[in-house]
Length: 424
Ligand code: CMC
Picture 1 (spheres, rainbow, N blue to C red):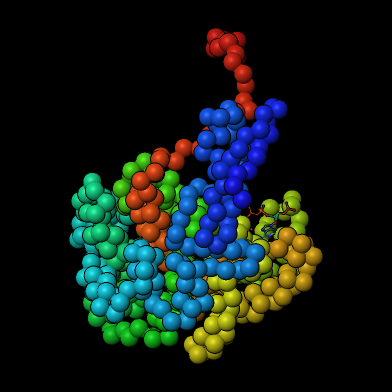
Picture 2 (spheres, rainbow, N blue to C red; picture 1 turned 120 degrees about the vertical axis):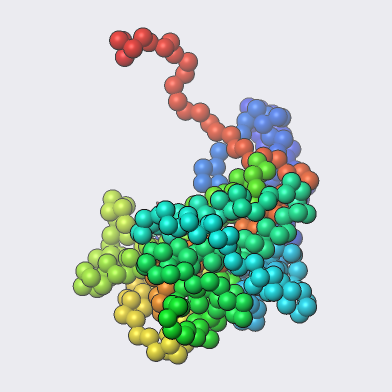
């Protein structure tokens, strides 16, 4: 396949083709406007490739997700979140020595500047944790020098990876009025976060190994997902050469929406609502099908996955076992399973290829670990961070990078005379 042909106003134009390493075909329209005067229109960007990337491969039809060529199932079964983060950010799996060094760096940069603690005092107790997270990440620019050159970014990458969980846990402690718990250097990444969330200064707290392992798995499953809304935001902001902290802060905001990372909160709210309403699942299935109800089955559907979400499959496989081992019998899990069963047999969901996504079951596991609902999206942000960083670096290192600047088709008024105020 060499070129695609486009006929427009009686002229034929040849458009080059880019073929990805998995056979994905992209019609290269970079010269389109210059040649034809026309642009493409693709609101929601469902058919637009904003970049080439060698980080993550998804095949939505076949339910494939790979980071740097490794399947999510293999990574989930054998890797740790720091190892996966290294893979995403540096482009290859670390040796044992490199992983030990990376873990050491993540551990020894986990304190935040003491002055940043004052930020938390300024927030009301019930401040949304995603807003706090995003604002404080943006503020890191004021505390840690932002080098001009990309090589100098390494330290800020480590800082961000290491400090985000401290900021997240401090935001939670502030919201419940407890003293901040400082990070502990003898703990691993997930364990340290659970310690900062759950420990109190007055008694000893041992991080349950099962919780630590489960959280590590959930972070791996969220670590990257190619050009989704928040990642595209990170790239968009970074394309203006805005610094890493500013770009990631913007990504956190994008993630907070209920159609994206906020869905894991919306799922639990929905399941709680169904339970409080007597567990009438058919009523909610009916509402989800009714376009006028404004209600969607949260945790169902995905822009890319049209068969199954491999991340949801991994979670589903472990969740029964983990909940059993934790000795947790969560009535919301029964509602979730029954809702899934009914929806998967319903023509509306079958025809539209709507399946449970990663957020459908992740919230049940977060709940089981004692993580409060309003922190779920924060958990997603901590997991997605290495992906954002990797995508930001890839974009900034691209010698052909240009500022992101989409066009539009204007459908407003034509030129008109400006009337004086008394005639309006
Ligand atoms: N419940 C009921 N109907 C739905 C749902 C749903 N959850 N999702 C999509 N539909 C319908 C939609 O109404 C439309 O129907 P029709 O063709 O008759 O107009 C059709 O399915 C296609 O939907 P769409 O809105 O065009 O699909 P999209 O690709 O723009 O949206 C989505 C994808 C994930 C935003 C959407 O499925 C949704 O809102 N799901 C619920 C929120 C959710 O779980 N989000 C988390 C996504 S996974 C985590 C992440 O990566 O962010």
